Length: 272
Image 1 (cartoon, rainbow, N blue to C red):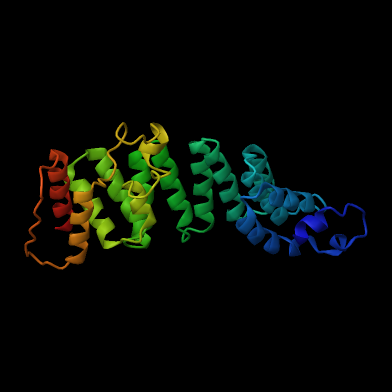
Image 2: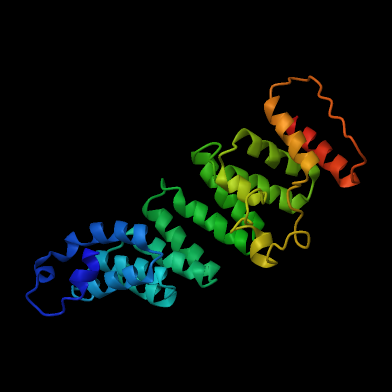
């Protein structure tokens, strides 16, 4: 609330005029992270920034605020103005994210690669490159970006399932799908893996299916079975996850659709 209050004081000599410009950004940035979905709060940040000189850090904060408002072209301009004054990787990353939002994958990837040169140990630009290239179905290049992450951090929770997903999309082979499914079982808290397999309520935001054809269930992909017999069998498997070669018997009281038996078989294969 204090940001809206301060931003409305336009007369010179008010308390905001005595604040050092560079002392603002480390308060404004987390404020944007917390309230960036509320346009009136973001507008308050921009109004406050208008009161101060356009230093590199404040230009960066402006870029982040503009992206929150969907003004991506203006966000790129602010971020690159900051970068020309002070070559910091976060300025490049902000501009790259705005290019990505505009669908300009080539420009976004070029800026992320520049950011990597400034700090090769930071994994986030590699992941952003992989996600962006996956969105435009450049599977080989996307896989290469994720593999660079795995070279630095084995079994990375975002990169590892992304690689398995790409290999399945490329081959459409059952074994590649089962490898991805088993990875999900071994990492049940992996949001990325669940998105890629459409196990949550919405399709994966960076899946080629969701970006290229809209991910309409039954039309563009097969949703996860949720029939009562499947849910019952899934629950039984979860309760007996350590069978180690043992057997389970599930008896149906009536005739089931052929797809049910196929889904049961798939669950068994996933279980191993």
